[in-house]
Structure formats: structure tokens, C-alpha cells
Length: 363
Ligand code: SF4
Image (spheres, rainbow, N blue to C red):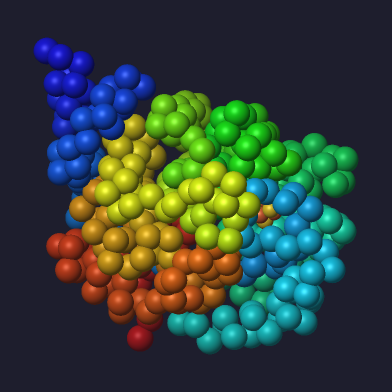
């Protein structure tokens, strides 16, 4: 049996893939084979169910001290495009959120403001929990947590514990980009290193904080670095079991220094679907894979349900980070649209909370 034949057999039967198996499948470029194998893996993990959630995103600030070449969202302090939400602004958002039927999650991610102390972020978590006690707070990527720890001169564990006491329920999986220090040196040299990102996730899992994981591809990384990234996540998941979902983002080069310097274009839908299917196959120990419609567009996100995704994420309400990089998608989507997209793909729509518990619709 050739290496490719062996990799194909393993992929179809749900056996663990090595790095060289994954490379062979990538190079083979048989998209429909990958779709079939990934669909089987999805159906082994979550049957005919496909999830969605009613959530709200809050971006607290776009003023950032990190200045990552990959970023189209951040501005420097003093820039007239900068924003920073104060308590009253957040109150207004939360008042509005109270009218959203079945809202189950508030998702908060932000830039690394050079001056705001950790207590500001902790108090936002308290504020959200006080206004919406039934809602799960998913907030702060490992990049933000590492920044808080550095600002405060405190260990990561102490920061996570304080946030947990304030009401934090889970961490989003962002800021992983590609877990290779060679790549990070080019795309985001000042933000958390590979080791710091992994340490934060490991610590969160040890404290019982479930998290997501992610990958941003299509910039200066090699295919091998993408696949190694997946295997690094798989190893941590073997150890902790704390990742509940994985999502992958194609890099949007518009309005970024990285895009300009390296003359990058956004990868095509073929690559998006191929990487999604391969991720589902390599990350065999993560149950849920998101097709994030804001990044992929709704039509490609729907197609992704045939390539291993089992979650269309949420209604969102408003999102600033990806739109700053030129995403042309809307800022929200209705629950009815998400349900229709799932049904058209032949699956059963299931409304979920942050922890994939089914939500029964009221009224
Ligand atoms: S990617 Fe995050 S840390 Fe880097 S500049 Fe943008 S907002 Fe700041």
C-alpha cells in the first residue's frame, strides 16, 4: 500500500493521522474524498445535528499596543478611529441584549489597550453577569490573558482565577494564528508566543474553564506548519480534553501591513474547504468544528457543512475585527437564516449554549 493509500484508508476509517499522512492527503488535493472522510468524522462526533447559537459580540477597544502586521483592526492611541467602551456604553449594549430572545452567550474580544488596567476587563465581566445572569461569558483570548498577566506582573493562573470569580465561563480560541514562533515573529512579533498561548490554554483547562481553539492560515506559513499546528492542538487536547470546538480563519489581507508587504491575496474557497476537512480529520479528539459565516460568507459556511463542520456559530449582532479587514459579510444573521442553511444541507438544526447543551426555544 502506498503512503497515500494508507492515509486515505485511515482518514475514511477514523484512525489517527500522522503528519506525513496529512501531508499526503493535502498534496493529493482530492477535495471530494476529503469531504466524504470529514463528513463521516463529523457524523461520528455529532450525528445529524448541526449547531448554532444566539450570541452577541462585544469588542471593547481597537486601541492596541501590539501593532501586529496581520491586523486591520487595531489603531494607535490618539488615532481618531480609535474607540474604547466605557461602563455606560456597555450598559447600553447590555440593555439592548436583554431584548434578544434566547440569548445564551456574550463573546468579548478586544485589542491590547496600552493603559487600561486588568481591573477594567474584570469589571466588564462582572457587569455582563450582573445584567444577564443566565448568559455565558466567553471572553479574552490567551493573547489578552497573557497581556493582563504582563501588565499586572502576576501569573496567568491568578488572572484566570480572578476572571473566573468575576463570572468568566469560557475562553474563545483566538490569537493562535499559527503556533510556530518562526511565523509569529513575522505576523505578530509582540503578542503571546506559542508557549504562552499553549500554557494559558492548559491552565484554563486545569481550572475547569473550557475553551475553543483556532488557526489562521493563508499568509506566510507553510502547509507543514499548518498541519503541525493542528497536531500541537491535538496533543494538548489529548492531555486536557478542554477544547470544545475548533474554528479556522482564512487570513484577510486587506488593510494589513502583512498583506501589503508580502503581496498576499485571500486564499480561495477550495483551500478553505480543504483545510476545514483536513482539520476535522487531524483533530480527531475535538468534537465540534465551526464554519464561521462572517469569515467564510454564508454560502461557503453552508457548504462547509459537507466538509466536516457541525456548527454555524451565532447570530453575532455586531462584529468589528473581521470587518475591519475587509469582510463583506453583514454584521448579523437571523436564527431563521441559520436554521434554513442547516436544513438545506440535510442536517437537523440544534440551538445550543456555549457548552453545546441544547436550548429549547421559548414561546
Ligand atoms: S491582532 Fe490583536 S494584538 Fe495584534 S494588533 Fe491586532 S488587536 Fe492588537
